Amino acid sequence: MNLLHLESFYNVAQKKGFSAAADSLDVSKGLVSRHVASLEEAFNTQLFHRTTRSVTLTEAGRHLYEKAEQIFLLAQNAQQQVMDISHQAQGTISFTSPVTLGDRVVQDILPEYRDLCPEVRVQLNFSSSAYDIVNGEQDIALRTTSLLPLDAVARPVGMIRNAMVVSPEYAERHGIPETPLDIHDHECVLQSRHLNWNNWKLSDGERSLDISVSGLVSANRHSTMRKLCLNGFGIASIPYYLIENDLNSGRLIQVLPDYRLAMHELHIVYARQRVIPRKLELFKSLLVKWFQGHPDYLL
Image 1 (tube, rainbow, N blue to C red):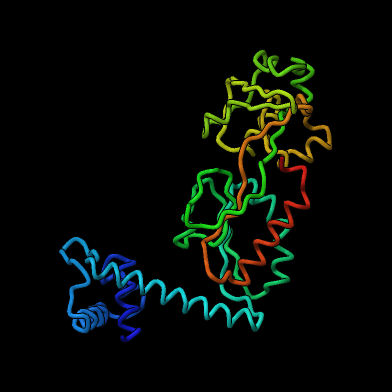
Image 2 (tube, one colour):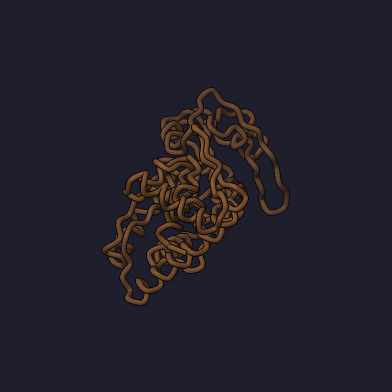
């Protein structure tokens, strides 16, 4: 079997079209068509259903696509192993994370990563969007959700620790809750993107309480909620990593510090591979090391 022909077939199946495959391979559409025709002739079977609007795999085509995927994965892993043997981490690594968490993490780990992998280009894509890790939209991610792709590696890091905080100005005007039920008597800064996050799950080690909070002001990002809280708009539930300096400086006061407020499961996620590229393994190790060095940020 001609591997160049198989590569053309594989790209047509992936891109769902001959033109897109040709663009991806930087060859002519006619060459891609001839490669696929040669395979179909060699196997004496049709590999694609072709219409004016779509290109889909036949049953034989699906079987060949699965085998081709294994072949090219083995080739990719072999290339990566050779590169790793020579300790030359190269290419690009893309990392995605929720915005405020990503900003906090990379300022610490990126200098060390650049020292370890000086030839690797780093792409940071911080967003609340869930990029497709399995299909290569991003190489590695921090995910604050329990809904994770089944065919990816998801290493649990812990539970993000939130703290209930309020500004000294608000506390002076309205006081501070002494019990969880007292929160109902106070104005709170709400989460507008995830309404279920406005149900605070509090625990003091002996009992657990669900407190549904209310307020007149809401925001879709923790960084904005922090600013609103600093300006006296009410009590807010914010990840500890974002307000640690505010608490230490007195710009914010922690409310009910004896109660734990667990919000999100945190995982390091990356695509399942037989051989993990060195550039990815090092980045993952630095993420793990960073969270181990900041135990106050997790429960």
